Length: 361
Ligand SMILES: NC(=O)c1ccc[n+]([C@@H]2O[C@H](COP(=O)([O-])OP(=O)(O)OC[C@H]3O[C@@H](n4cnc5c(N)ncnc54)[C@H](O)[C@@H]3O)[C@@H](O)[C@H]2O)c1
Image 1 (cartoon, rainbow, N blue to C red):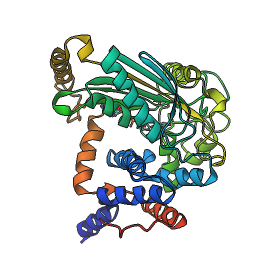
Image 2 (cartoon, protein in one colour):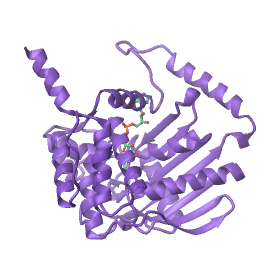
Image 3 (tube, helix red, strand yellow):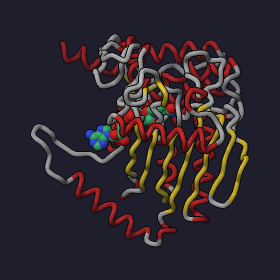
Image 4 (tube, helix red, strand yellow):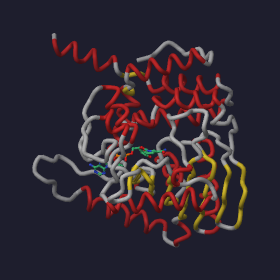
């Protein structure tokens, strides 16, 4: 009997991925976006949920919509090209939804890489682009190594500091892999993403002591104390240094905002987030031996995943592999969406006059 109950509970947490896509896209259409733009944003968010990165999934919809309604996210569907010189471009996103301007920026970086071997695009006055994996997967699908990065508001102190000075700036690197499965390293430069702490707070769960400090910089496992404190960098001073460099490649290089000029997503939704993005594409064919690259890459991947496992470990993974396999399973069986996230999505839909289809599980 207990087994039946558990199975029912598990099913209750799952929704059909197609339904979630329709629902999220419907909300963005209702708030003023065209069919294609609404689908791009929905794809980005739902793919994060499918990959198990729920902190960057449908839970973001209410915040995005509140910002659109407050005017701090514009209804523009593309960025303005302000510099276009050989392999380099700079875009001004004009506070448009980050998924729209980031698809545009990476497509431009790839086009430049196809022509020059390398393409680099910096984007200023941007908004949150969701999970960085989307853009490097697109580059990899075009035969390029892709790099995508963003800055966030300061969340982490310098080593020994008592005030946040750099964001947990995400960086993703995607590499074309065998049979169309890219290697995708996609990570925030904090030990954990802020969204994961928010989820723990909403669910009343403790967090690991390595994730964050409290307001005084002391250790904590309380997610609410952590939300008032500072995130800790991944790998200590090394993660801090990388986060600072991402702030340089995004905000400083693009002529946009860096450091404390980048604002929080949730604090005051009428104030633009004003983050910045950076996209790099390296065309493998231009390096002269795309087939050889594929063989060498496959050999390296096999060496890693075929290496001996430590006691109690079944299997070794490449970066991005766990998420890709989770995504395949969720696409077939249903995607996990917390009841609170589903409720907030339905409330947001009602607020903007979107009629959502009946939930399909
Ligand atoms: N837009 C923004 O401002 C922003 C800010 C922060 C984070 N993010 C996003 O948040 C998401 C989550 O980031 P995160 O740092 O929590 O990711 P994470 O710590 O879950 O994973 C980081 C990387 O490690 C790899 N990995 C995990 N376990 C592994 C294993 N056992 N073997 C081999 N590789 C393994 C993953 O595939 C991934 O590439 C990312 O999509 C990131 O882009 C976005």
